[in-house]
Image (cartoon, rainbow, N blue to C red; front, side):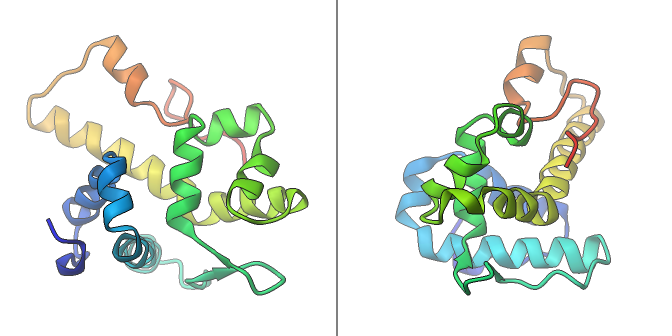
Length: 159
């Protein structure tokens, strides 16, 4: 699917985008288009799905540097997810990997929590719900491999 053609009207639309992000070569090839679509998806999810209208997109640091939400998502995913990054106190490293200062790590953590944490949680929950509805089952190893930083109970890590 070509990123420019994507529209976000229902869960399956943004599930397709998040599924595309599993292929790092694809992400590199369509990086700029995916950044725009990723922000559109987050905006749609927060405003339409969740009814949250107070979070501006794009997001900016206090020094007017733009926070690239796709890059933030990919780095946190690469490091094992929100829970792992938080447990290992890696937010300063995530900030530095994004080109910001180490001291911006706490701000980056808050941005992740405000924009991405609930989206990823909802994506995982809804994906499992759809799989169960479609009769797909997973064994324990599959569930563990698909976990992206949340405890096995389904609870979100503390923000």
